[in-house]
Image (cartoon, rainbow over all chains, first blue to last red):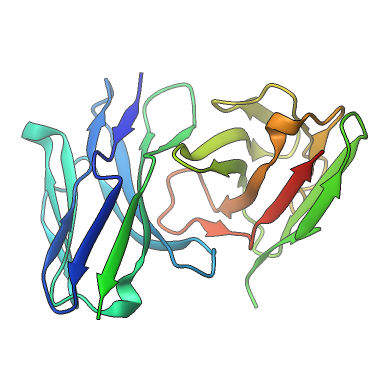
Length: 116
Length: 113
């Protein structure tokens, strides 16, 4: 069965610090997709990134970077030089491409507070 | 503008009074899905649909029904709402289930008294 664990319920850091949000997943499939979403205080859900299981290259997008490691079943998200606008709840999600189900499983989210 | 719309955005109702939350997308997406978001539980998938007339249960389908008679619409039906269905509901769509961008609606906040 698929599962996504975001062990950090809430994190607070001071602006300009770097912060890493952890995501650990469980799946029996060899083909799967991992996602990160951001939910700012306004409530909408914003897609950040998708990674498929065959692409272990790390990704960088501005101040955001993602570290995908199949050996540890982790897909961690790092914000460099954090800003107050990064304050949000961040969700990691998993979808198994090879299973009969086409469910998407979300983690419980990490609430990130960036303090000015 | 590409978007997913949900109606209503806010709803207060009483136990047992049937209600429907509509969801519509204008992107000709095949995959549509409903989630509920609860504090400490994150987002949980209720139902999803791979295409017209194809629907399947997510992780928390009890107490909900859906239909997919047209590609653009995916209503969520609560036949007999109960207080434990008080939640924030999101509809989402994507071209296929694992496509890069899943578009989410703005959310519907439901309170069942």
